[in-house]
Image (tube, rainbow, N blue to C red; front, side, top):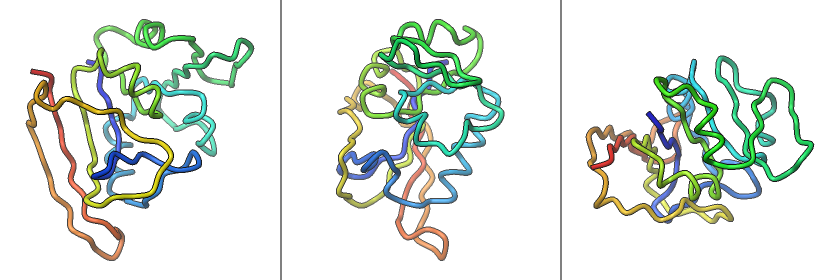
Length: 160
């Protein structure tokens, strides 16, 4: 299954200056649980925002740079090529950034979304998703607490 996984705000903010704007430990934990052992597809800038490759995942990096070849990654030049290198019978997660979400959205079967219940100043935004084409199959609300400065919900959608 091709799965888009993202955290975004009410105004569709994804990040600023190639960084995540919020700190939500439960979101990081969920991301790790869902993506561990799977292929993760991302753009070059998203990959370079990590201090090191994420453990127990196969990294597929989409770039226009011809000689880009980070150790331990599969490097491709298109969204179609990215999905083609992933095993057909396994989940592949599209993890960003904004341009990669835009390119990948037509191919996606499932969305795993963390929706932060605030607006944020950002320079990267989630592309518009027509939710009439998606069915919300699960939602879990999280209130603010000592580890989370923002209310948020985990939402799972399947393509209708």
